[in-house]
Length: 163
Length: 176
Image (cartoon, each protein chain N blue to C red):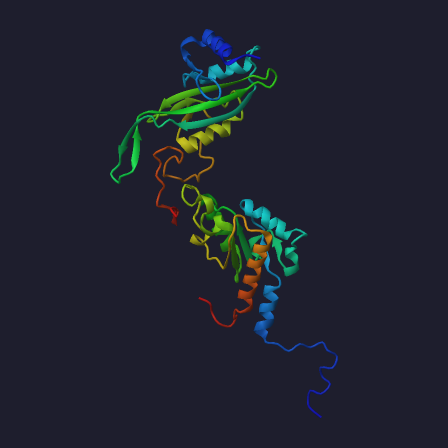
């Protein structure tokens, strides 16, 4: 008779790696900072609403940066707003992730040439994990971006230092 | 209801030299040109006169006429010396259902226009916008500071025709 015989017979035990467990927990409850800038924010709201239901991935908008671990930059980042975005980002606890949603946040969008007031890509002030292309991206595109972010978190290692 | 010509005649009778001209050849509406230092009195008259009753300032907008001398700067870009900046006032009378467009022109190097904020409250933000975008100074405005651009924007007025974007703002690179 083996040492562990019948020890797992009631079925309440799962064997896994601690790292995988933590990553799975983190990627399944991404609390995103509720923050919209322009037209993309309407698509983001649509993604949160019942039809596309962001909640089923564990994405809940939180209204304070201190309780959020992701921020979706959805819309045109003006130079005036860029400093505020940077401040919000700095207030978020580690580990934190950024989805840049739409052409404006990615590279300035239609304002890239004559937009004297627009930051040409939010990655000039904060580091971006996932870029979602489109103007504005449909909710499906944002969902795809989220899945990409989850994939990134799943393959992360909490034991090794990132930087 | 009054036509632009009738309004012009009324204003000419009341203000004489302060009402400069009427331009009827515009593709939209006739435009009455007014002295920039008399615009407040003219607007007050337009608002309070029983026959006119212009109770609504629909929009106030600045325009760079770019009619000055265009010269090349050291770095090869074009700058404009002289000429004028203009402010347009689109007025509407809700009870009498007539409208009129006023215009004032002011020299580009020292652009000063009297504020009409005390006549129509909505002129407050409109004038701040014209100041922010064109650098037009509105005399006697209670709170003339930038409204759209950051408060510490030092690169000038973005809607002027010879505006040059700065290379950096607060450590952020501005051009694409």
